[in-house]
Length: 73
Image 1 (cartoon, rainbow, N blue to C red):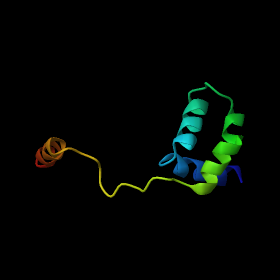
Image 2 (image 1 turned 90 degrees about the vertical axis):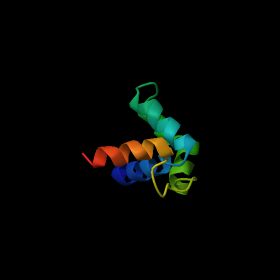
Image 3 (image 1 turned 120 degrees about the vertical axis):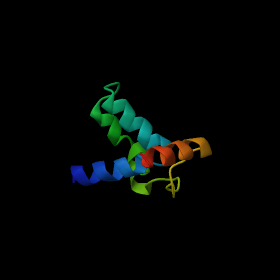
């Protein structure tokens, strides 16, 4: 059950500031693990990511060119 909640929370953190902030706070040892059980964090995990996933990396044209040049090497 803990593993399932952790997976849900990690996925929610990709598009939820509440979930991401709680995870960051716990992993950086600023808060105890009980911070992941606050009602707002539980709700964020239940709702999942609020922002849509990216269809491609958010790269500028210059960055895309650099990657294309590097892949030719």
